[in-house]
Image 1 (cartoon, rainbow, N blue to C red):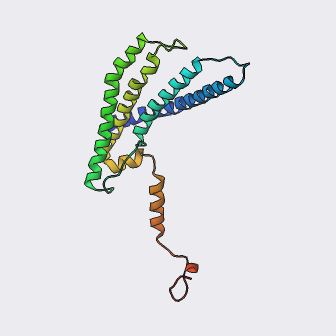
Image 2: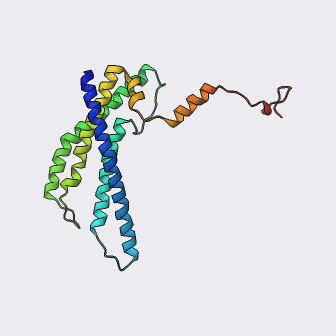
Image 3: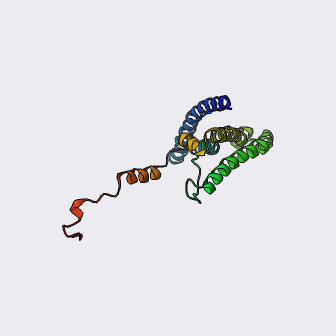
Length: 200
């Protein structure tokens, strides 16, 4: 099991590195296409390329789906703390959270396959691009979510949820600030109080 976790961690680290570069490329492409659309509407000399609107929309869809997968790996999605951290109820809900992400990934892969294949029968209006390249975003995202959720669950099974979260979760800036403040204690500035114990 430990060897499986090591291999999965190594694989996911490489996938995450590739996803970061791919997401950067999609973001810059998205911005460039949007800027071109704005400029071409105001400068008659520039040709109106209608496919830029489609490609910017497709890039945005892929960014959402791939970013969702990375969010699962680091628990960056929206989380509502319903129970005190460290309680048994909190531990159970965190297990449910990661198992639910795994279930969503499975749904994306199973049903996303048919959705992607339906794109073979459809083409984008302006560019003529086969829609399978757009519809397959769900299947790809689902596969990544499964891999990332499996790493989290296996890590939690072997080392416990707190150690897994400390290793994988994105640090909470607010929580870190509160812990740092608690470590310094509630020291009062002497200049804020007078000698008789009353504030000026």
